[in-house]
Structure formats: C-alpha cells, structure tokens
Length: 271
Ligand code: 13P
Ligand code: ZN
Image (cartoon, rainbow, N blue to C red; front, side):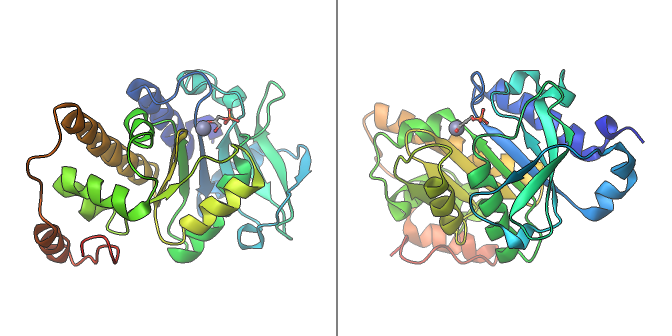
C-alpha cells in the first residue's frame, strides 16, 4: 500500500488546497497536524523509517506512542498536494512522551512546523476532553477573524456572542464559544500552553492579530468550524462598515436555537 494514497494523506492535501483557495495560507502561513490511529497506520507501517529523534521542551505523556501527520515548517499550503513527501512528515511521540521521532517525510531535510509546541499540547487536551475523538488541529490565518481581533475587545464572551448573532449555525457548531487570546510570540512554549488551556473549553481559539486554531475529530470538522466562524466574522465586519447593527438574533432566540439541538451555550454569554 502506498502511503501517499492513504486516506489521511488525501485529507491533508485536499484541505491544504482549500485553505490556499480561501486566501488563508499566504506563503508558509498556517499548519496542520492529524493524529493517525494505530488502525489507520497498520497498513502503512512498512513505509516508515527511523529518522531523527527530537526532545520536546514540554513532555506530552498523553500522546505517548501516537503518530501525527504534520505540515513542515516553511511549507506553502499551495504546494502540499504537489509535493507531499517534501511538505509533510509523520512523527511518532515516543513512549515516555518526552521526544518524537520522524518516521516519514520531510524529504528535502525539513522538519515539523514551528507551531509544534502548540499542536502537541493542543492534541493532548482535545484528546482528553473528547474521550479520544478529536484528531485534527488546524492553524490558519483566517482573514476575517484576524481583522476582527483589531476591532473587538479581546474577550471570549464578547467575541463569541458577536459571532453567534451573525448566523444561526454559529451557536450550533460552537456552543462552547470561541476562546480569545491576546497576541503572544508565535512558536513559543507559552503560547502553546495557553492555547492548550483554552482548548479545554473551546474547539476554536483565536490568536489576536495572527490566526485561528480549530480542533475536530476530522479534517472537515476542524475546517468547517473555522470556515463558519470566519464567515460570521466577515459578515460582522461588513455590518460594522455599513454603520452597525440595527437588529440581530436575540439572546432568547439563540438560547432556543441551542436548546432545539440539545446544546448548552457557554455560560455568561447570553445573560
Ligand atoms: P510554520 O511555517 O513553521 O508552520 O509557521 C507558519 C505559521 O503560521 C506560524 O504561526
Ligand atoms: Zn500562524
């Protein structure tokens, strides 16, 4: 079996193309990691090699033994589908969770994304809070969400409410709201730890003036969350440019909508 034809590889190349088409992946902006389950990996174990082992600055014992397909640092999303072997790599977190080994890819001497200190703790958190269901962490420079971070207060409840009001899908897709973080140094351990903490409660986390992190059980779910939030942000920006809201979906209506789907909106947002 050719690993380049595996479902996880096609998922990665397909979404990379979509991200570029959205205009969210300028140059090397953005990165993705996908946890490959042992069942999915089984058919491709013969394709793996043992590359360099790298110590992690912060151990992730929750991910010990897990495989991740990860975009390389400096990689342009627009090139991933054409050059998957160079653009992507598979890393295996070692048994103590303190290091990883590159077992496939980064063919031209690349290495995993500089945001790995966020991706791995993010996976650890989402794996735990979703009982192992969450498998994708997607970071992208979603234009409208970034723009919004310049004009709204950097407050989780305020931004969540504003997005929920823009379209009915928002409270249904992310009833737990969207976590908002102030600007922090990209690639740092601090931003990674802070993001992982936010992901305890939210599947979406906005990095002010930089981009968005979305987590999901599939590539489509993570992408769909970001796509929906970014569309709501786009509408909000248009509404603001048109002179501001004259009316919107009311708090009681949003509560009723969530309740129709058996969902509980984040506390304190609609009160
Ligand atoms: P990488 O090229 O290292 O993945 O970084 C891109 C990015 O978006 C940093 O936040
Ligand atoms: Zn980024």
